[in-house]
Length: 429
Image 1 (tube, rainbow, N blue to C red):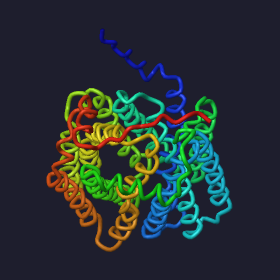
Image 2 (spheres, helix red, strand yellow):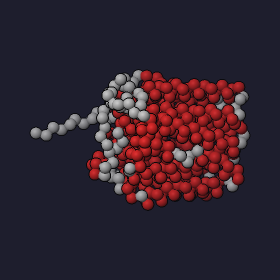
Image 3 (cartoon, rainbow, N blue to C red):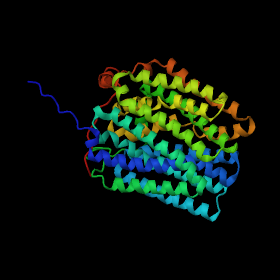
Image 4 (tube, one colour):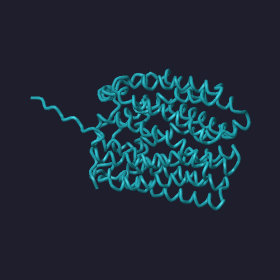
């Protein structure tokens, strides 16, 4: 007689997952407001596009430097505790930024230092939160959980753009205050979680950091499909962030009110949210390879159009084209790679892939700021559009990524191609 395993409870009934999600929403909203507004705050304080780009580049470098150590921490210590520490230290740094702005000490050096430390802290301690997800939901729900995350991020982005622009218009201290409150909300939600989410089983032998890192690198290099995704993500991240930031800085320098600029961000987020609504059905019915390929082609087309867009409405239309496929793309890709990565390696692999995928992103604000001052908006935007196009080229050259099937076949596909390793369930501490 065959025994049929009971279906997992819906995500909405998973109390621990709801607490995790509430904390992430609070943190994402505060961070979204702060991230959108920080270039505007920097420009308002310094009055220089070049200085704004330089501060943004240093901020991005801080995030990159914290990724690998953060992944190692997430795979060695209780992930709940790391998340609590992330929220606490984030609130402290935003309090320091508020004090600096109120005192009138916001020089380029001071703003760059605070930006570097905050982004380094977020990368160092923030990896633990995403690494918890595979321990919160069963494997069959990973794709849907990733789609929910995309929808959450899009909804937060819809609010953070207008709110960030509005708050900057009222006072430069309000965006960091919103980010401080978001960090405190994350701390409170995480405090109510019951598990500790250890990355390893209780009887695991101690390991050396260099061995942990070597294992993660070897695991990544052994899978061509991961390498292809990394190439695509590196180019698309640089191109997308660069062109969006170029538009933001160009419109700001042209005297467009920050509230109207924030509405462009809302349009982009709304299109991402629409994609997130469709994502759960798409990942169940459409192959992951298609969900990666089509959105990148749309981004390339929109990126080429934006430099020639006649006004804000045309730019908004291009943003819709760029954003609508992001959620299905991320839900499919992130869900698949989380599925084939062991619990004990979620932090390291996520950090390693994130560091490579975002390795060139610190160049985006620098190229945007300097490009606007030296070459003007159209050549700078076209440069970033070409970079997105190179990402599309990698998709077509790399066959493994395009061949990843629909979510229901991930497990069998991973076994057939030797992509997955067995998990050992960590114990509670």
